[in-house]
Length: 80
Image (cartoon, rainbow, N blue to C red; front, side, top):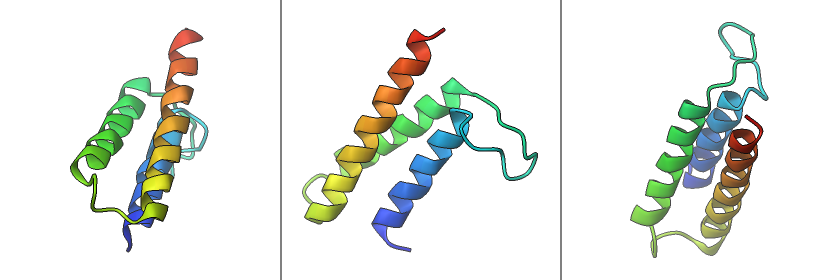
């Protein structure tokens, strides 16, 4: 597994917590914004701790994923 795949796996977990994807075990869609936020925060921590050690492609991927997830989280929280 490479770092980009790891980022995408965490991103998929956040999307799962937004309720966009069915849980692989229960096959039900469940929204859990607290878990989505934890996953986004984890990605943010990884970004901070790996700063200066990523390839340009990995950096761009991390920036894009975090931007998209953070904007989505804001939309979800605002819709409540």
